[in-house]
Figure 1: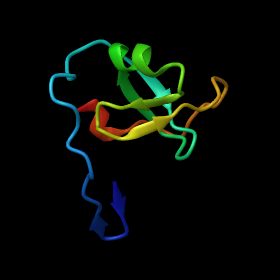
Figure 2: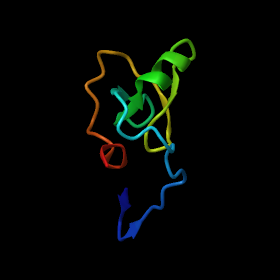
Figure 3: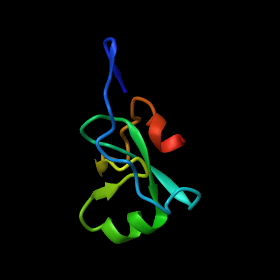
Amino acid sequence: MTIGKHRRQAVHAGIPGQRGQRSVGIIDARTHVEHLVSDESARAHRDRGHYLALCGVTVLAASLTDPGRGRCQECAL
């Protein structure tokens, strides 16, 4: 994510082995950005509403009616 002239370094490097798996887009309630979450993570954490995205960010699921404000570029890699 670019902030002004400085590029913010990702805190998490992502989750090894999750790339290439089936995933679902979940909009983060805090940032309103859609992140990709593996099907496995979605099933494992659906009762809590917090998911680990492919980029390594913990996502707090937004309302299903929230249209979001874009997609995470790191999840798309």
